[in-house]
Structure formats: C-alpha cells, structure tokens
Amino acid sequence: MTPGLRLELSGISKQYPAVRANDRVGLRVKPGEIHAVLGENGAGKSTLMKIIYGAVQPDEGRIFWNGEPVSVASPAQARRLGISMVYQHFSLFDTLTAAENVWLGLDKSLKLPQVAARIVEVAQSYGLDVEPQRPVHTLSVGERQRVEIVRALLTDPQLLILDEPTSVLTPQAVDKLFVTLRRLADGGTSILYISHKLDEIRALCHHCTVLRGGKVTGEVDPTRESNASLSRLMIGTEPPQLQHRALTAGGVVLQVQGLNLPRQDAFAMDLHDVHFDVHAGEIVGIAGVSGNGQQELMAALSGEDPRAAAAAITLFGQPIGHHSPRRRRKSGLHFVPEERLGRGAVPTLSLAQNTLLTRTEHVSRSGWVNVRRVERLAQDIIARFNVRGGGARSTAKSLSGGNLQKFLVGREISADPKLLIVSQPTWGVDVGAAAQIRGELLKLRDAGCALLVVSEELDELFEISDRLLVIAKGRLSPSVPVALAGIEMIGEWMSGLWDRPTAPAVATPAQA
Image 1 (cartoon, helix red, strand yellow):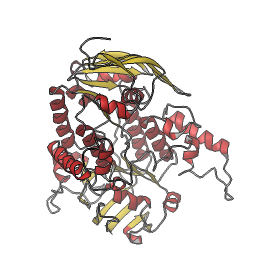
Image 2: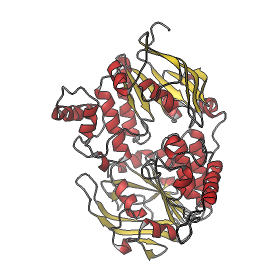
Image 3: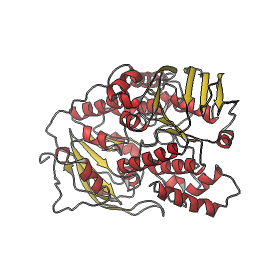
Image 4: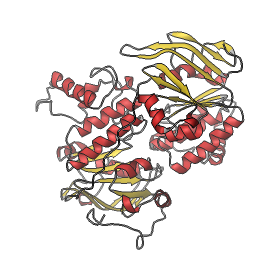
C-alpha cells in the first residue's frame, strides 16, 4: 500500500482457458490524475478494467482503494465505492429507454422523470446529445456510447474508467468531452483512460501505463512522448505507412438514385432523395455525426431493410432494392456492420461457426456443413489478419473488441467481394491493427473492388478515401475528392451546411 493514492493494484493476475489476460499487473492512480492504459488488442486492458469495476474477479493480487484493501465483488459494490465505468462493448438493455437504463444504476430514491431531467441537464452541459425517452434499440453505436458516458457522469465518481470513449464521437464532441474530463480531474476525480488514439493520450493524460501480453512493460509521461515512441512501446514497432496509389477508377458498381425511405419508428431517421455511386477501384467515404441516417442507409444497402424501390439501388446496373442480404452477397456485395456482437457475430458461437453467417461455400446444397473446411477457413482468416485468441473454436465473445473486428473484416475481405460496404472499420482497434485493416482495404481497392466506408474517424476517411460524402439529417452531400476537402469543410457539412450549386462536388471519379 502506497499512501496518497486513489487506486493501487498489486500483482493482479487473471487466467482464461486460452490466454493469461493479466500477469502480475501493478497500477497506481493518484487523485485528480488522468491515467492512460495503453496496449495492443488483447493486451489485457479491458480485463484489468473489469477487475477494478468488479465485473471480473482476479485469480490473485490485491486492490487498495483510498489506502484501504478492498475486494470489489460486483459493479454495484464498485459504484458504492465511487467507481464508474464506460464499457467499449456497451452494457445497455435494448428494450429499455436511455433514461431507464441510466436509472438502473442510480439511487432508486430518484424518480424516473427526475433522472430523465438530470440526463438532459448533464448531457447539455457536457455537449453530449442524448434523448432520454428513446429506446436503446433505436440508437446508433455513437448514441449508445453517449448514454453510457452520461450514466457514468451522473454517479459523480471518484474514479471514472473510460474504455475507448471517443471511438465513435466526432472531433467536436471529443473536444467537449476533454473539457469535461479535465474539469472532473481538476475537481479531484481520477480517470483511467483506454484509447488507441495516441494523439488523444498525449493531449489529455498525465501518466501512461503500457501493457503487452498481459504484463506491464513500461510507464511514461505521454506528454513527453511522440506517437512513434508510444507505438513502439505498445506493439514493439511503428505502424506501417499506407500507400495510397492514384488509380483510374473503373465502371459504376453501385448506384443509388432517388432513395427515399420513411423511418420505421419514431426515433429513426428518414432518408431523403439519396443519390451517389461507387466505381470499381475506388473507396468512397461517408462522414457524419452518429445518428444522422447512417444506420438506415446501411440497412437499405445491405438488404436488412428491403423497402427501397427496386431501381433505387443497382449493382452492376441490376436493380437490387428488394433483394435479400443473401442474394446480394451472391451478386458480390459484402457488408461489415458497425455492431460487432449481435449483428456481425453471434457471441456464443465459435469463430468457425460465425464464418457461416456470410460464407457458405463449404455448405452443400442439401445443407451439410464441411466442418473441417469451415474451421480451416476460419483459421486462415485468423492467421492472415493476426487475430489473437483461442483459435477457430473459441467463441466470438471471448475475443477482445479489436481482435473480433479484425476477424469480421477479414471474413468479408477474404470472400473476394466485388463491392464491400464497411461501417466503422477500425472501431476500438489498436494502431497496428488499424493500419493493417486500412492497408487491406486499399489492396482490395487496388485489385478493382468498389468500397463504401462509413466512419466517424475523419483521419481514417482522409487517409484511405478517394472521394468523400457527408450524411446529415438523412440527406447526402455532393461528393468531393479528398484532395479538395478539408476537415473544417467536412465539419461544416456534418451540420448539413453544404451548397449544391457552389460546392466543389464531382459527379464521377474521373473528374476527381
């Protein structure tokens, strides 16, 4: 025990069947300190945070809270101590409203209407747009993350744990969140901050503990480090530089014209007169604040929502607006959704079994599955995309968020699609893995595939896209070549402030 610390961990270890997630980890956090925990996917960061929060019990080691030894048996006990956590994979009930989800973790002496009013007050003061009465199942990933953050802030914590809090926030929202976190730290709140965004860690955090393979490999002052030096500490090397070669795009692969879709519930977004196209050998990026129609557009393009007029969506000139997702895949359209667990993968199924969700080449016409070939396919994806876990037979839920993301992106890329639609391709992925995924997307583009990438990471879109579009309130901006776009301009367009007659728009990649 070290005097004057808010939190101290000593010799914390946790063994799972396939991996030792934490190996005698030590961690010290002072009052009012913003302390980063840095490491590549699968390094043990999330497991360590869950141990602090009482969601996972360590096999060995001790926890000291404000100088006293404690055993944190549950998240409820952690909250009573003054510890709050925002998970990377959200812990919200889909059938309840945002207010009801928040209410579950608060003192029940407060009435639900009081909680709803408090949510609005806190959300507005911190620049986080949250609608208390919306059912969680109608929220995008970014909107759910805002609910989680507001729920944590409402508990007035002594220690706030944030696991990838900005992964689906806009740059403006990130700036507001940082103001909030600095204000909390100035008031004595300690913050444990997990992020793969090295710029954020250097700008925000006072101290940094680095994990690799479940062990602490270093402690540094991030303000004195560069992105390159932090990357070397985290993954042992610097991420490879991407090569975005100029190519002449081919013919139109995907064309969307006059797509109008009314919302399916009161909290969804109407799509209004959406027009755009994607050519072979190009990446078209779509930027926008979460909840502005991205989910509805992805559902229409993937086939999850088949209400579009047949001719409103065409693939190689053939109308597919009414086609099922399976029929679209047979035509060459593959899709990676933003929600990993529950939509991209079934949590309790193995990785091999999860390949069967979109890859049926090893299923006979009579329905027999060649298990050996399916497992070999999964193992090939694991090897190619450096997925760390227990192998093809490990369950999807046993992987870290970043490793599951690599597997899902790899599953679709390895299918050799003619059109790949990806939503949030590197959400929660470390710098090395993010560079690998982006590099694979560029390789696919160079091989002649058409790609549509929806991301709230503007840096990512500028790095890999040939043309950019912005979605705001269910409407789509003109397209603009990346060379003519700037972050400030795209930020304005995210508010719907584009002017069609004067915008530097392009009709085709050739003009770009």
